[in-house]
Amino acid sequence: MKVVILCGGKGTRLREETEFRPKPMLPIGDRPILWHIMKIYAHFGHKDFILCLGYKGDAIKDYFRNYQWHSGAVTLRLGRDPAVKFHDDHGEEDWSVTLANTGENAMTAHRVRSIRRFLGSDETFLLTYGDGVGDIDIPASIEWHRNAGAVCTLTAVHPPGRFGELRLTPDGKVRGFNEKPQAEGGSINGGFMVCDRRLFDYLSDDPALMLEQAPMRQLTADGKLAAYQHHGFWQPMDTLQEFTLLNQLWETGRAPWKVWS
Image 1 (cartoon, rainbow, N blue to C red):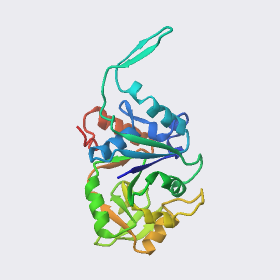
Image 2 (image 1 turned 90 degrees about the horizontal axis):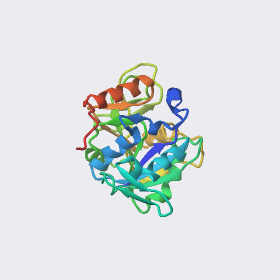
Image 3 (image 1 turned 180 degrees about the horizontal axis):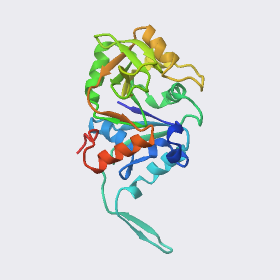
Image 4 (image 1 turned 90 degrees about the vertical axis):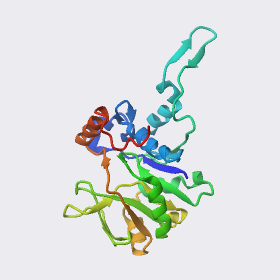
């Protein structure tokens, strides 16, 4: 199953860090948060990635183009007959990464619509944001999606109340989708979504269209937006404080999202 990751936002809340690089390239330890997200999916066998690029997307292209250089020791022979020898293997040699330019200023719905051709004949795909990690049970979310008969199943999490709130029914359907609630509490959309191709029926060719607004509200109205409830760890990287927190967890060996060995 292909994994689509939204990597095109400008990360304005982290302007001091994102002025020169896109937010998915901000490091946790010595690897970008994007790598951590991909490792979560790869742990569950999903290693075919489609990255929706936008703001400073060339930095992400350069990272994967030179991935072997970043991953171990290298010997260079200089002179008129140059040669390169890479000494170390890495755990990502069976990954496939499609780097798709989806517009410098496009919003999330348009970015998803732009990569439809890369899905081939797949009826279902995985979708998430390039700035949040968690110990999500990906197989369980896929099973929940299939049982729900939904067009899109998001992962509902319980973080601080500055995000859009979801109202859920007991069987995991979304009853209401409020992007910016007045009161804190409840569940919010943590990404790590499972989507059917029918999702594209809800996406117009409008670069300003956000997936989290009209499309999700229409899915809710049609009874086709479900939620897999995750009660474990989930953390976005939206502020300098969150950037620092994730790095502290990683550096002290207490990173709950590190589900791989």
